[in-house]
Picture 1 (cartoon, rainbow, N blue to C red):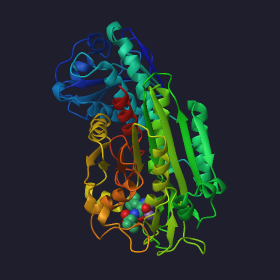
Picture 2 (picture 1 turned 180 degrees about the horizontal axis):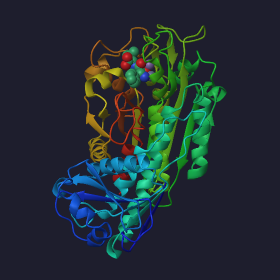
Picture 3 (picture 1 turned 30 degrees about the vertical axis):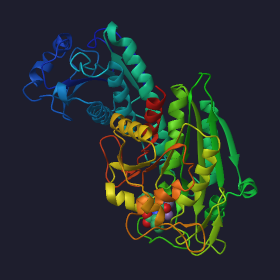
Picture 4 (picture 1 turned 180 degrees about the vertical axis):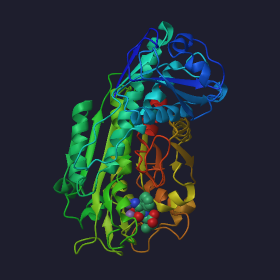
Amino acid sequence: MRWTVTTGDISKLKSDLIIIPLTSEKQKGLSALDKATGNGLTKAASLFKGKLETTHLVPGGRSGADWVLLVGLGKAEEVSVESIRRCAALAAKRAKSLKAGSCTLKLPVDALKDLDCSAISRCWVEGAELALFEAGLCKSKKKKAVVKSWKLVADKKSIAKLRAGLREGESYAAGSLLSRKLVTLPPNILTPVKLAAEARKLAKTAGLKCTIHGAAKLKQIGAGGIIGVGQGSVNESKLIILETKTKKKNAKSITLVGKGVTFDTGGISLKPGQNMHEMKGDMGGAAAMLGAALIVSQLKMRVNLKVIIPTVENMPDGNAIKPGDVLKMLSGKTVEVLNTDAEGRLILADGLHLACKDKPDFIVDAATLTGACAVALGTQFAGTFSNSSVLAESIDKAGCDTFERSWPMPLTDEHHADIVSTVADIKNLGKKFGGASSAAAFLEEFVDEDVNWAHIDIAGPSWLDAALPYCAKGGSGFGARLIARTLQILTD
Ligand code: BES
Ligand code: MN
Ligand code: ZN
């Protein structure tokens, strides 16, 4: 969709649909539109009270549009960036069903004094773009986009901020949609090789350096975790590394590590068949990091960024790893594999060890790591484990800003004690309970003590069984916006 800002009288501009978000208080500056619609807005007032997430349609009359859509934002003092996203989503879906190719929009910036102008337009774009995502990526007849252009009408004083917000919103939406697309693609198409190709494509458009290691190189460097998990698959495992450096002096260095299991059957410890197709989304952490890299580069954030993505397919096979096998990891530590379905931690271990080598200021990993975390927190919250309060607080704040929320989870010496092995250094399976924490403890075994690190378990929110206001059911793309916002906070 194309987003532009202009000044002028909204009732005179030509478009298919005029959209007016309104709070429940009376709003100024709409008298020309009211007149053009034959007092349509005044007449609507008895039916439409501006309640959050309600709409009302008024005929366009002598205005430049066929219809005027009123969208409720609720009480002005209660409007948040999230309610703006939700209203935008609702408006965008109504615009689509009205087959409106072009929309003009007047955001009530004066009524929303507590919110920054740029945050209002940013979140409007996010909500609208994300709501119109089409999951039918493999349909033989491609659906054409209906809503094509949005024109924001604004006063001179707010135009610059609104425009800046639009650009930010477009980037945030693009990153999230990239992530959602990758999670939605079927696993016969999005293999590790294809994920690497997608990363290379992203690197090209976003101006990032891209290095991809294949099986031979992984063997040479001794990445036992990645090799082990991928050895049951006919699809070659890859290690993707993206990098970008800023010219800014004293810029922070941040490394992102994402779990890229393009399909998780469980391996020899095979998963039950029901809903197994959802495990095409087991590269949600990788998708989140790629989406975040897109946002960071488009917004030219001043950070030295590295993205490390180990990507594999976890299959049962004559050559697959078995329960009882011992792997020698990239760090040199040995791991007894007691369950081949606890594969994410095995590939992330190598990724995290590599990440520590250049001692970045912060390391953040994201992974659809444990069903236990999804059981504990549901689909609205990821779980965050961290050895750094600065990092944990930034992630928390970013979660509130983006509404990709996470909750702090415990990670203690006792969790480390749970993964001690009798034959090897550690094992990839904890006790019966607390599985999200023992998985995090496993990861921490591969993180140097002196680096700030956070692990975000997104197993719950990365796949939705039911739609949310601006996210259809299925792969959500969760994490791209959260991570990008975290980086913005850490580097501001
Ligand atoms: N990819 C799964 C975790 C998962 C489960 C993600 C549900 C999304 C939804 C992971 O590889 C896994 O299988 N974890 C096991 C670990 C167990 C064997 C210790 C789990 O959670 O059951
Ligand atoms: Mn698994
Ligand atoms: Zn998995």
